[in-house]
Amino acid sequence: MERIEAIKKITETLEDELVICNIGFPSRELYAVKDSTTHFYMLGSMGMASSIGLGLALSQKRKVVVFDGDGSILMNMGTLVTIFSQNPGNFILVVLDNQCYGSTGSQCTYTTDVDLHKIAKSVGFKNTFVFDEIIDFKQVLDAKGPIFVHMKVKAGNADVPVIDMEPEEIKERFMREIMKI
Ligand SMILES: Cc1ncc(C[n+]2csc(CCOP(=O)(O)OP(=O)(O)O)c2C)c(N)n1
Ligand SMILES: [Mg+2]
Picture 1 (tube, rainbow, N blue to C red):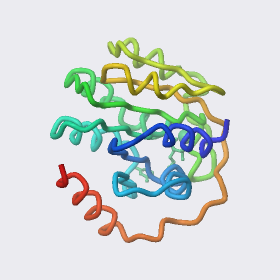
Picture 2 (picture 1 turned 90 degrees about the vertical axis):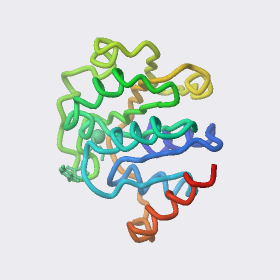
Picture 3 (picture 1 turned 180 degrees about the horizontal axis):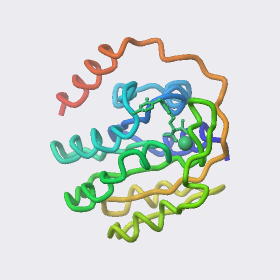
Picture 4 (picture 1 turned 90 degrees about the horizontal axis):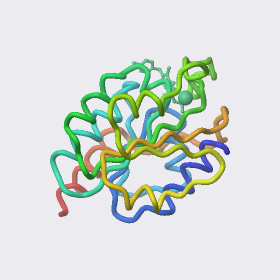
């Protein structure tokens, strides 16, 4: 499955969950598939989407879904230990694993050799899912967090435009959304 297709299928099952998305094409693809005030497109550093999502999950009650990348999770592996130890029941981490740094030229990452799902399980995550062609995200939303979803996708980026919002706009719109409830 293409990454954009996985993002579309998962997003279709979401209602008022807060969504944090990894830098680069994943954010552009999410924006193209569906934009919402509940979305925060992380335009900065790799590895930070899961940490921003964790802070958010710990500070309010709504469910938080993070779309992360394999390259980004490898860059901040300690995040898995922190998420597990903090144990947020409202947190879902979806790693879109295309086995490459897709947004910058598709150079291979180490997930060609290393299984992220096994790592999450060995850290202690009790609710984990692996999806390839078929995604049952309703089942994920019904499970108790913290949840780790290993979403295997094909390499390649969709032909989608850049996000036509300034980073400040993205941040402020998202902050207003969080303050609403
Ligand atoms: C710390 C850091 N290093 C490098 C970059 C440049 N960069 C932006 S996206 C990206 C690739 C991200 O790969 P992955 O997380 O696997 O996501 P994919 O694009 O494959 O979905 C890189 C290297 C960055 N933004 N931050
Ligand atoms: Mg990747």
